[in-house]
Image (cartoon, rainbow, N blue to C red; front, side, top):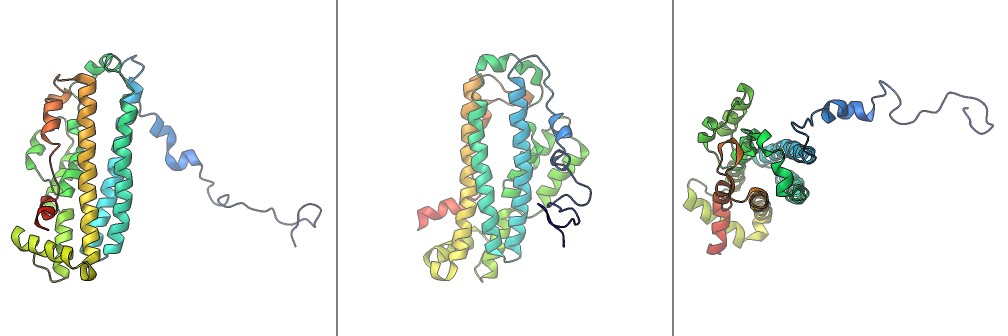
Length: 269
């Protein structure tokens, strides 16, 4: 019998995680490599803030793509409960994206101007992952493939794959069809959405899933709105970097919807 505090000696007690390779916290998260990626191009104090925030955005985008793909696949498989669970996580992340803008807004226009010239021609307009999110959500626009500068072949292939693969809306239509609800065109789909809305006793899971899609759409629109406000606060009406027009371009996208039929449904109830 092993013992401690005066008991007979025995084999040393092990703590969870001490066996095997003893992987460290920093090693598991690859922190040395991660923390080496913030490399300001100037001596401006707030450039580190700017780089960190945008790198964190890209990490969140990566997670969102992972979760939304899984939610789409769950809808195609008829596992609506799983899709709903994943959308809860998606919504939580998207709320963080909106709140994160407040951190960036602690930078004054004067602070930004100290290093803004170093950004040209880079721009958030060129975020491949953000475009992937839009394509996956249903806003596919092949024109973007010709607008990216210095895009790698691997990134271009990812965008082409997103253009070719099913969207979240395609997956929801498959869920409706599985319930013998017609989805051959927008008119039939609207009739099916009305049937779901008016018979929640039979179709509440489909109704709640539609609400999850709408929340995803709404939070994405809220992020775009807060983003344009932040840009106006920083540079006003100046042109953006990377060839974009800045705030005017962002304003043009604030009214965009991923799932227009779900919004139109409200007027038909």
